[in-house]
Image (cartoon, rainbow, N blue to C red; front, top):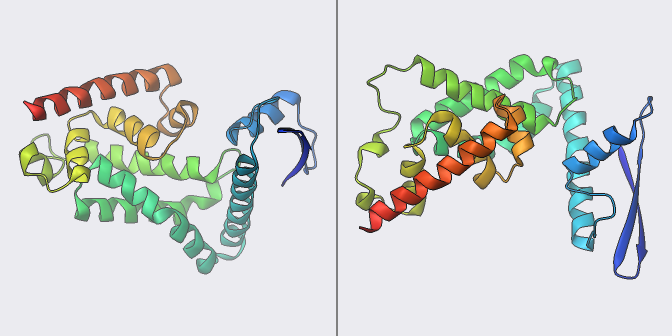
Length: 231
């Protein structure tokens, strides 16, 4: 449980953090935890930042309680709360990965949460639950890509000319479908989900330098596709 102690001096906020656990944390471990919340020692923290940090801490504490009830009691209501919190996010990721295929995205999202329910006891709480969840989602999609026939298109929407897309979301899905699955995942997690490259590396099991390389290639490719569309 994170307990935040905030001291305001003028327009600057000096922070301290106490970790309520049985074991003592090293300074590097403490900094790593703070870094996960976007907090840097000596950095300026606005009141809005403080509220956001506290909200995220509460959300993660809620998740720990829900996960504990699932592990101990197979609590379906607690699992339903996790499902309510993350279903839309996982489906959005799958929509981006599948080129906007609604039916396939629904199937893959359902498979993700089945795996979460069956394997939640393997979650060690050494990382964020969201990281563990997105790792499952990424692996579900990669497994799908490996199993489908080489001649099978990822989505029927990729066969439609760019000019025929109804809106910007469909244009984006069509453009992302042109990227390799790992590159597409990195682009989705970075730009749509707002994740840092370090977390993306943990989710995809790709080193951080390669994640940045995927992002660079992905941006270049999407720019080319957009420019081709304008011609």
